[in-house]
Image 1: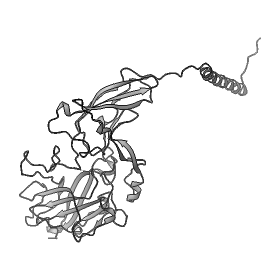
Image 2 (image 1 turned 120 degrees about the vertical axis):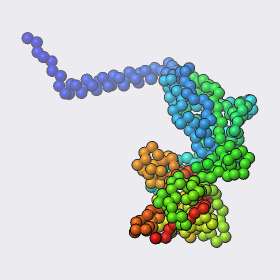
Image 3 (image 1 turned 90 degrees about the horizontal axis):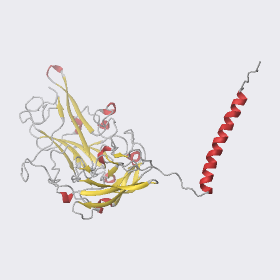
Image 4 (image 1 turned 45 degrees about the vertical axis):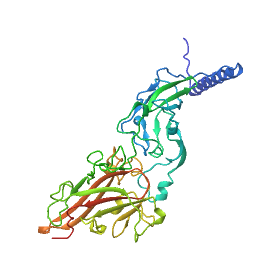
Length: 398
């Protein structure tokens, strides 16, 4: 009768070790043979079908802000081996003129840390990004194409109302890995003029001038607040629920740059980084911000007071914040963006909520509110102004 052969733990470990040594020796021998006999390394694979799934970029391509063309994932590698080097070549206009101006290198603010919306000082925000030199138009290692915010109307001519083929900007992209290289031809961009803020009903997105009802006309188009609620007219006693309604009272919205006036408590250290919230009455006189008595000013803007602490400085005519641009800084849901932190797909719009409380007839508490979503893309000193054009809001108790 034959004895059964048992394999104990020691023997199992010995076998495993020997197999590992054998595999390691095989790999080392293979690598050694390549060096010994000067054999080339294995080449990567570069598919002849690798291509961009989108090649023309026009709609929504706005100068003065960072655009990831096509929204990312626009390069189909067709199982080509990464890393792949992407190089923009042959920049040209449709009629063959040189268009290498869009490849000019500019100092560019780039995030190096994660923006959270919880930063408690301007210095904390700025410590998370720094200047790097980047071409205005460049590629990334995954094939994405980026038109940086440094490309603006001052260095790139924006599209006109009619885009002629000779005015389109074309370029090719050379893709390379150790398996070879090939050139993907005839990608094109047609960027629109900078839109420094949003909403833009009052801004002509072709010319960059104040918008009018007809081309060359003189009747201006206005922005209006997104929503009004609980605000009664001082003289009408009617609720002003529709800012477009002339019967209950028009309310305009202005987003505009400002310069200091004599007597302004100017924070010279923050010039170029200031944002003001202001409300005007029908005589264009500023309404004291303290009348908006339930507004949480520290939660309106991710900005800071003159002393560097979170919130805004409340003055007689306005509330002023020291801020970093753009606003919002990143597409991250925060308490300063529309829908707050619970809006997981949001973060692209900042939001203002101005509120006040008064006692109406019958001792009923009425809460007035203005809600506004907005964006500001251009650095500078800006003010967001709500103008009660024809009827003043009622703040006094009944």
